Length: 360
Image (cartoon, rainbow, N blue to C red; front, side, top):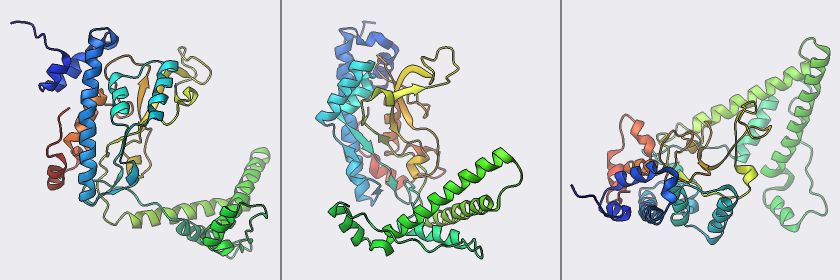
């Protein structure tokens, strides 16, 4: 059989999407040798051009379905000149990003599909400032009949030299008796309680003995506040909560400070580069984990490690061996790959979302 002399790009456009990316990834660092390098970069840009088409189409379809994006203006954000300059600085100082990842940032920019829909995605409600003030007051009041329970909040006054804009905002929010004033007075009370806990804990450590009554009361306050906030959250989340579906999110790097991007491991590892346990690699956080995407407590963020001269990269924490493969799975599920774990997937919505998406 004659050898296939077509370029990787020609084969990719002919439909060999998985095979081409698999072969490019298998080349490792050799993918950056010409003539392969130019061909591989062209494949990466072609792939991400399709990705951009898909995410823009999905964002429009989700809006039509009544999907409530948490940050509507950030659902799809095209790359800016500032982002491209930031990527250049990162690679110049730390080494190359995988071709697929660099092409995503260059062509797509960033994507954030976090949001809520009863059949597509959950996003736990967060308490409002007024609700937090109410719960804090109630938790303090529960300590009655202690004479120090539910103290009258001291009046909050802005300093005379406060900026006019701040003074105006303070007044618009009700002044000392409004939500902001109440929150500030309760914050001051809670800080006083924290100081008491620190003092009492230090005394216990130094002198031993039983827990001081004041420390016990503050411990009960913390437990009461935690229970109230949890109950409010549970009540709010009983209303039309969708599945935890891992909506597609790929953040672009917002900073080029390599100190902030260092990957830290075990400081006692013999191969650690310094006393903090630096592994010698850097990582870019590209998304929250599946639980944080629904505003629940979860694990570490999805990350891409570099320098990496290869064509594609693993998505750390997620356990996906291929960034392109992860995007492919996202499109298979209309932007919500976690739906694969649902007993009953929303067939109608998925059919509308995935119709006509370009294969990558």
